[in-house]
Length: 198
Image 1: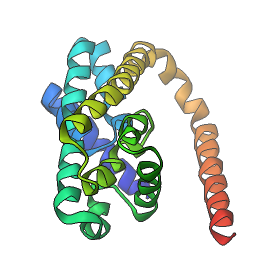
Image 2 (image 1 turned 180 degrees about the vertical axis):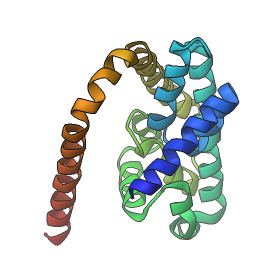
Image 3 (image 1 turned 30 degrees about the vertical axis):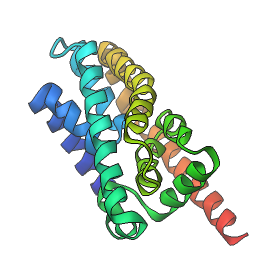
């Protein structure tokens, strides 16, 4: 699990560091914005890119990625996504949740989900299967992506500005951070298991 996280982390760093705005667009098309945008924000703080530039690139990438998933679901339906969704970081549980959201809220679920981590990518599946109006899908995706891109980009800039101060404390707090993350993951897994056994 850690190796996979490290791999995606290194890939994200290389995409942003090597390809700049194109890397941000490609990265947000295929990986969660929560990974790409803070890195891009750090690059902004170093004068390598601009905040407006990374936000624009993120929106282009996110909308493009959503359209790819929408198209796959539109053509292949749920069976295709069940079979190959994991390659797009979409698992069965997330598909079930996205289906429930879309059934409850209709096309507006696309707008709502884009404001939430992870779900923004998965909601494209039921939208594609339902053959949601393409113009509305793109509009909702754009509107939902904008505040997320702005917020994550800005946080990345602030992280970059404060990085020298943060770095001084990292060695001291590494063990604490790892312990907190571990406890959080363990708590989540226990909670999920108890819910599934009910």
